[in-house]
Amino acid sequence: MEVANILFLAVIFVIIFSINIPFFNLKLESNFNYLDRITLNIIIQTNLILILSFLNLSISKILIVYFAYLLLCALYQFKSLIKSKLIFKNTYYFYFFILIIFLILSLDVSYSLTLDWDAQSFWIPKALNFYNNQTIESLVNQPNPQYPFMGGLIWAIFWKISLFPEEYTGRLFYVFFYCISLASLTDLIKSSITTKIIVFTVLVLLSYKYIYFAGNQDILIFCLISAAGNLIYKVTGNNKKISFFQTFLLLLICNSLVWTKQEGSIYIFILIFTLIFFSKILLQKKIVLLLSIIFIFSFRIFIYKFYNLDIGINSCCWTDLSPYGIIEKISLKRMIIISTFFLFSFLKNSFVLLGIAFLIISFFSKKVFKKNIYIYFFYMMNYGFIFSAYILTDANLVWMLKTGLDRLIFSSSPLYILIVISYINSKKLNI
Image 1 (tube, rainbow, N blue to C red):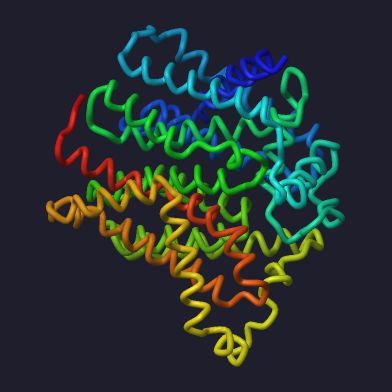
Image 2 (image 1 turned 90 degrees about the vertical axis):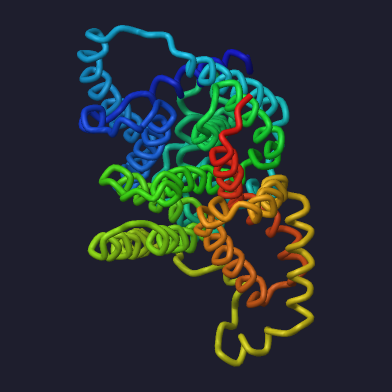
């Protein structure tokens, strides 16, 4: 049954995320390859599902609209498909390999089944809310209503449409997005298909752990930051101007981050500031980008207020943010504790170690080092935010660090891969 479920969903994922909006099918830039288009479609379609939920629709009604949208897009594309000829390309070997990895990882998820503690307490109740045909309005009765719900909504959607509805089938979307996000980063390598397959395999071996797919939303943050990193590399790393399509995609990624986890609201500002400071963007477009993410953040507050959902931060962890309370919590002892946990978290994360290793290597190549300055800026802001959040907590500091820091480091780690890719491309390495 598990194998049939996985194969069914693999086909579903490939089909529905290969369907482009007609407008984008006509206008997409030539440098948007198949993996880029799948990433774009994943983000467009999950945002569509999210927006439909804002209308207080049940999952049954959301699915009707969603599949009607897919059908219309597919019918439009069918005209162009019947006129085109299928030409086998070497890249198809890479796509087939990605699918094989997805099937293997999905089998692991389907046989492990255990949900993480946070997933049991906070995230699966949101998925069950939608799976049982409840709406956004009824989230007020679920645990931690201040937490974003997009991950739970998508979880419920694919749980509902699977061949044999089992809870884990909704989480297989996370596995698919994970594979696509790593493959999209790997595809930035200007080398042979063999090199890409090897690098992709190494990245999966270094980063895959079942716990990341046990219901927590950190894996979605990881995938969304991967997608943003891919885009920023193409714009900033290659010193190009940002196009309309890239701007559109970036704003959709930012919207997804805001509705995935609370820290997503911070990540959108870090990503936008990174892009603004290190890319060729006209002042008017920088202002538009900044105003857009302020609107995205404000719109989330509006929706939460409209449906009487809690919009506060976790009251158990940050209760006193007065000037006196902040000064009282900043101490050398707390700084040493946080720094120690940071060090151990870095040592446990393979992407961090890989990025630092290539960072050291890149010191000997000024061109590579300068090309990656935007990545160092991103991580300085990211770790500064995380450090500040921990030093200001009123909860048990050690407990907070033990239960959360590793996941925060993991969810923001994909940009380290860009340092490796930049080095490989600069040296024109090939296998």
